[in-house]
Length: 134
Image (cartoon, rainbow, N blue to C red):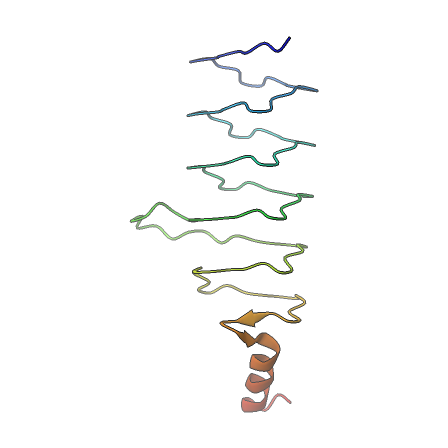
């Protein structure tokens, strides 16, 4: 029998959950700061109004994942800190309506990559020609 449990105004700091089925569980107005998740199935999960600052994702399967409305809250006077993607397979990914000001692409395979429909390889070729780097 599945037991439904409702916890309200509880401090479960430093608790450990192992081999537990939490499918369909809901966390609302919860502090999960410094929590550690390992070998977790979050397929189909939804995250809204979440502070993911300084979070590290490693060995994550993100296929089909949508990141929408990322950054600081609207109207914030602060500047968003940079985000790093390292050793990531982002083939067939789309960046739409994104602020990429001062973004850097380093040591990446850009074969077939386009910016506004123009192949990056063509842009780099024209740049090299104009700057005598051919």
